[in-house]
Length: 144
Image (cartoon, rainbow, N blue to C red; front, side, top):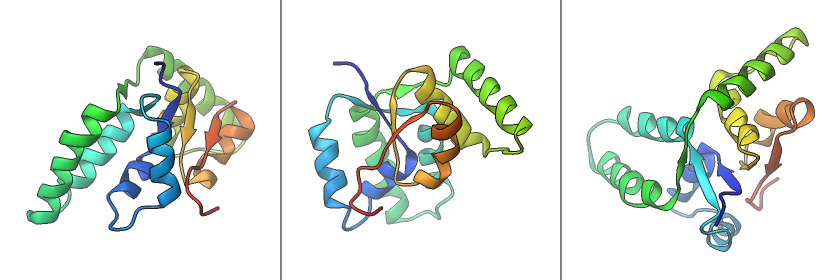
């Protein structure tokens, strides 16, 4: 089955909460086998855990990443095609007076380069990419 959905970092983080959004969890189950994460998201997740102080929480989250996330979601690389898309996006948006955060731009570029739908609950962070750069976006949480 083809990877259709690229999960943003906050979607994976939501799953680690004591009471994750039920609609999100149901959507992850419904779309099982069609979801992936970007290499940028993998970095953000690993970095978030690395920055935690040593302890049970860090150990638990590290296990979650390596025993659940990595085997469950293919990691889509930031490759030469995504880099070219990123350069185009950055150039166009900077010329329009809209510089964007590098990691969000890289995640959006990976989604666009691979014709994937980015799933995030941070729609405001990616709005510029939907308006200016043909990013397809969905929010699987019940919050708006």
